[in-house]
Length: 209
Image 1: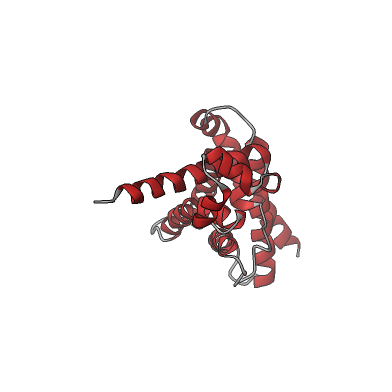
Image 2: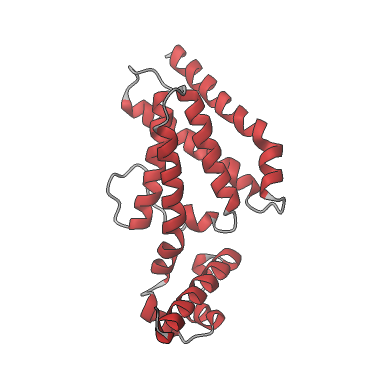
């Protein structure tokens, strides 16, 4: 059984994370100071530093579990048997879009803040590793939809284009106040069409080459 001190410590940690998430989402990561987070959490900034060494550590802690959960979901979809590559790409795309719109207030934090290249195998920051892992899973799904003889450099370029397309879709609705279920139901045909357009466009370009 946890002691009173351990319970208070966990409550303080949760309060800090909640305050950081709210402030980052409403004001932006770069505009919020450690002192402001501590004040919103009801503790001193020295107390905050006991749990998190800096804002980067807070960002990582807020992002790690959700992104790992999304990666696991995408990995399970990739491993499904009896599905065409196109069906798997559609499902993974829907999972990614659903995740981003469900977490729309945190979307920029999860994917954009202090981001670096998505195709680097060993980025310096652990959070970027998670982001790159997600891109790698999507890249696998895209690669399966392309001819086996296509050069890997071109396959990577197609995966990048598709990844940016998904982010463009998400970015259009990150500030929407429409409930998630309603938004997904209303836009599901559009999301599905975006996959078809990408695949058709890719095939046309490859045929032309």
